[in-house]
Length: 177
Picture (cartoon, rainbow, N blue to C red):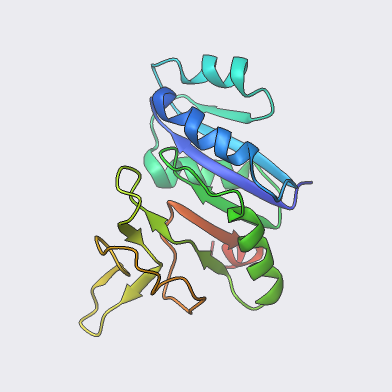
């Protein structure tokens, strides 16, 4: 059993997957099972995965179950104690999984861990630095559309994690169902 299962939902993502999976090959933390959940793609995704990424486990769904259906299927198909969700249109820095694994070790009581996400096409602009919950009851992404000037570089408690790049404890997921 791998220490971390990385679940990547994908629908017709052949043009995106190489960037995402090549970045995972460069991770400094390597005790990982990578699972691409193919959401009924009609492009060349499965052929690409079979020929270029034989180390990746493919969970082929018969139809598009969208994000939540795909990641839940991926989580159920793995047994790692830590589960990372990663969008297929991301390029994780080489230390991404190592940092998340280290945080999980240091904060044993935390159920999830957020990542700082930058826009793919403007890598100096934030997409999310974790989620917040406002006093008015409206949730949101911390830092969304702001220039990344480093003010989200330090570890902080957040309300939640953007599912595009997050780590979850399986025990917490099992507990909440």
